[in-house]
Image 1 (cartoon, rainbow, N blue to C red):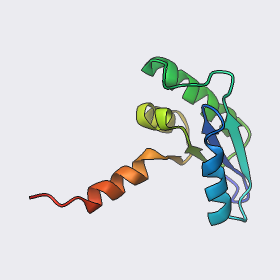
Image 2: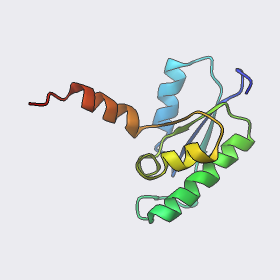
Image 3: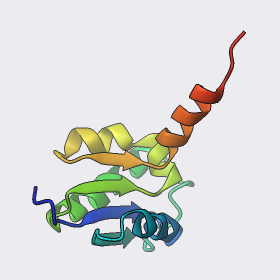
Image 4: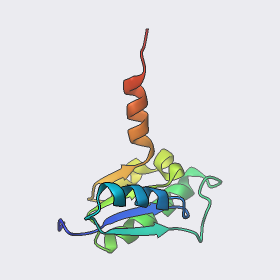
Length: 111
């Protein structure tokens, strides 16, 4: 993948634009393609199989647009489908829940 290829970000609606804003601040040199699936919002009321199907469709669309990595900006997809998206694509895939969960585990004192 070309290093100047854009990042792909998707959400079930427009809430993921806050993730795009944070990415633009942190990585101002990066081009970003955002996909907000407003036709099928909300994902949170859907079953896991449907969420996985929608997530794969969004991720494949971004892949077909030539992105170098995908950020899942949807909490529902981040909870249900990140491994499915990773398995289906030969691209780095990041989600919004995993970094916070790792930080919480690191900050937790046991015993």
